[in-house]
Image 1 (cartoon, one colour):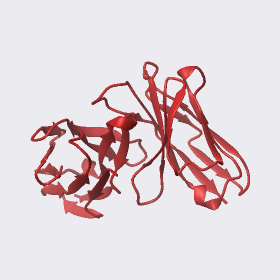
Image 2: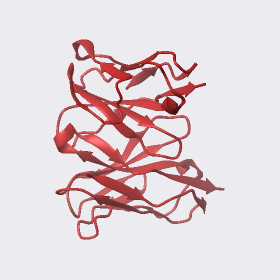
Image 3: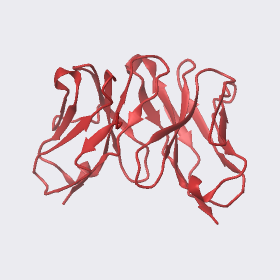
Length: 114
Length: 113
């Protein structure tokens, strides 16, 4: 297994455009998480899935953001009508279900909105 | 809500110096505690963890002890190397929300040869 992979690694887009990011978790992991990290800050939770069900969404996740995990495998995070404030690193992580299980992170997608 | 506070950086040390990065937390109950590390150009990876009070997590020469009485989980290393230069994050999982992680702001460590 190659770990959690994210695509693309970098994305530059113009304000107002839509963007979509993909995350492929470790294959046997049933939980998948999205986080956002801005410069000088720790990652902030956005949402998580258990299998294909989206079980929690942060208040940070405005109506312009949507995430899916069809069939409980890969996940996509779409941002509609991007704003400059959306510029950040978007991190994906996956884990097994359980009290003390480790989350494994991908390398992230860096979004720049110009 | 649950939160984590880390000492601000950057921390700059000479090789073989001692390291301490402070971390304190606020949480209901007694959560597990983690230290994650992010090396330049790489993703976050778990460095060590402790699952209950008085547990000591250790890995790669780093240690951290879960102190319930001071709600702390300070990261220590007796002799740092240039290869330890990275960003270190203290974190706690919120079990009732699928173990989502609450992170501190991160501490940049720079080790000079």
